[in-house]
Image 1 (tube, rainbow, N blue to C red):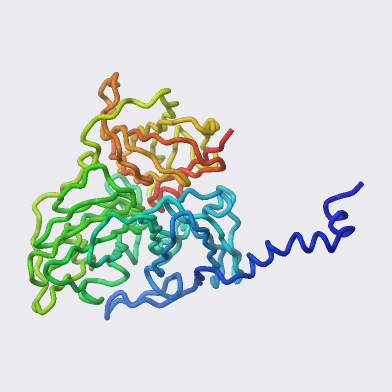
Image 2: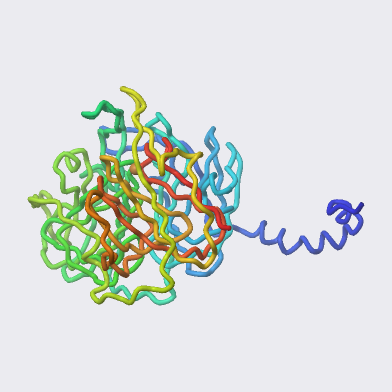
Length: 458
Ligand SMILES: [Cu+2]
């Protein structure tokens, strides 16, 4: 019997010459190198913290890709534990998407891996570790392994003079008991780009400029609200995808994993604070100064009275025709599971926790509607890998009778949606990227304790 190996031995020369192009590709210099290694961070002059980072910095370097132009990234793991890097918001094959559950190989300690892929879709994406932290509030997303990723469109319609990338993060967490006896993470320090207010460089601007803010919430567990004193923000994209209706808003809300792109006119000279709207979080450090040229003084803050945000305001103004055929509905009941006093809650999807969660196989080319039925007392930032989805309905009360016609939300394309406690929300996606597809809550402690499910294609 001639096995593949025999065949290669028999025809060694031919096999070698066939292998050469692949070999050459593997030996070519990568477009980017990422070194995963321990680092000591100065969050402020008084707060020093040991964590793990990409290329010795938090956030990691801004990776700029061109849409549809293949890239190779070489990743070296200098830590003592297996690692995996997830490319969040991209339409990648499972073997490079960066999820062990989907089949991306782990990068063993002190070894190097290469990810070669074709980046798409265009827009503001990010990359981060996709490991588990379990009870250790220094590991996985609790640490410093996150960075910005920008896939440049072939034509860039946004006009701006300067762009700023801002990552929101919470650090030095500990578990605190909530009213119901379950434990939840609580943080001592909050930063923008790894620095507390006043510890980093201000955003330097000039009067008359239009600036473009790319804001990422890389927090392991916390939703954040951001405002820029003296200015209003024009939201142009959610999760990197242009919104049908750009809106001027007083503040942004970002759940873990979410991104917002907003344009701001520099029309109010001074020194201002861009920061978390909730006083205690801003006091923990989540703010940065925005300084007009030739202006000095203490950065000014204006405290908004309310937290204001909804996704629907960015939807298409005109309702589109319902696509046909109608989608296949996948109901997903989300519940918590008390695991005893002093422990964190477990999580179930349709009564089961990962790895026992189950979904019917997806048929390639079909449209699906994920119906999130959140029976828990927490809001959940739900993330689908390797696909984007369109928001279709939000905040429907669980108790109310099911409406015959779906709510008329169209045109908002995202990869994370925050589903409010005790409500139902629906998103639709086309199963157009065959392969194992992870779905999970982006809150690290929820994902760690069962809130994950793998979709397979038929
Ligand atoms: Cu959750």
